[in-house]
Length: 279
Image 1 (tube, rainbow, N blue to C red):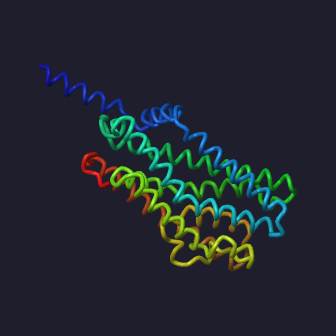
Image 2: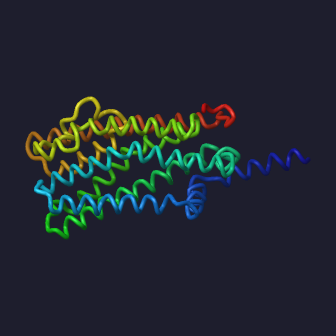
Image 3: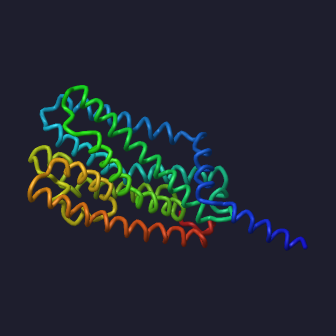
């Protein structure tokens, strides 16, 4: 009789645990975390400083916007790795990962954690682009509509989801330092994925549309998708066709790989044992 009650209780807990409830729980948890303030501060500082620079710099402000999006996108592999590494490390120290592993559904709990961290990154990107646009507009040099910035933010968010999936996996399996080390390597890769951040400013070239093989590496997707959506508002003729083609190919590739990575992460966490992780 006691065994039956235990099984029934466990089944009931599992049925009540939904992704929506898990996301709400994660949001409550974040109220006590410095991550929200950190994301908002980083986005605001980046947008204001770079907006002020391009507000007085001699560069074409549209190319300046493209370069700013590329800069934020290139930084995302490292920033995502730091955030995910610190978050998992904090969870490990506070509860021994009980909030992720000792729950009715590890997969739902981990999916909610990845989703909420990703949404924080989306907010930070939106704050960065919004403040950049506002400051550039204050100098009378904003060359794009709000829709271009919104598209760029969505593109960068879409391209960064795979970074959260991989970074959370690395932080769980190998520890915070491994995640940050891979993120640093991703930053270096992204910096060269579009020929260098200053290349487009100097040459006037739409660099995201002409990037080489590095543009298809996951570390570069946030940078490249955001930049392509900015360049979509600048290109004409053959250049416009090249931007659209690269945007379609990169989007489909990123969507497929991100889905596979997320499925792999959720399958892996079911058999993960904290005591077996690498150091």
